[in-house]
Length: 355
DNA sequence: AACACGGCCAACCGCCTGAAT
DNA sequence: CATTCAGGCGGTTGGCCGTGT
Image 1: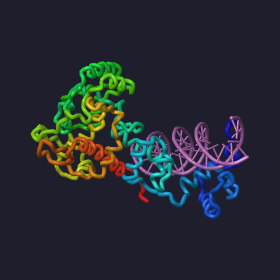
Image 2: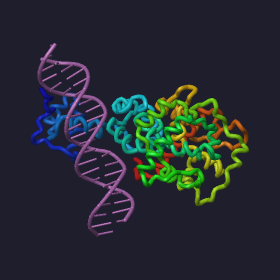
Image 3: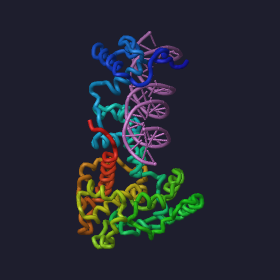
């Protein structure tokens, strides 16, 4: 026996609510409360389904509804809760006073989800996106052999078997995709990073990535004790880039996130963030941490301290970018800065009217 | 000015759950 | 225990509106 309709559909109005209907509903609820939604519309003189009335009230007319743009702190809360709860919008809404599940859901789908994707983070798993694993960069080692690898403190330890498998996949991708451009490691390090990445990006099927990782759980480090901080003399290897070779969005990054004027530190931070998702897609052989174990929540928990920390100078062999003293702090600050940067970019880009 | 396009979000749809009978 | 039904939830849609051409 099928479920019966919540109310008689014939003759009932659908679509956007008018101001007059809103007023009728508000007046009725203020006078009588909202006990029985089935009988409410008839008693209130509304040609609406009870369900429609309930949604209108809970999502729009309720007096405690909070309007306006979500704050950065609210977004943090949503992401943290979503990483634990998934699409339990109503549960998430209980932790955000004045926000409805519908509003949170819409905001997630239109803003946060896209931002996480831009950051290379899978919005479903909250882990780095395996489908964008940049195998060609691993193969060419252009990143690991570049001076920028030093600022991560990354010592490459790529499993030869992984390289073999990746090479096989890369080869098949190149054969199938005539537009594929292999990055030879000799190119411009300071070009538009999105463009560079697009050019040498190998999009693998998720299954391929999972297989690669399951079969080869030792690529390069995530919290790898073999990681060493960059040395001060290594930063000297960096050559000052031509101004028009800087990443297109570098200037706004400089002003909003780093709080320092030194171009080299800013550029280091920028490139670190650009590559953050990529770095995190790698497995730690020591602790057996997989990409899916990546704890985005704990990274975000450090946002408040990391996002305002100035980049440190390359003064000694144990200092990290942003002044973090440990590798965990360093990674957190990359993530935090990146997320804050993307949030600020959204603010700048949006036409949102502040209320 | 007119049109096309894409983003956003209010509202709807269909399914699920649990209480009442 | 089976059935009915209200309320709740998450996914989806359609229309509005701003922007680009």
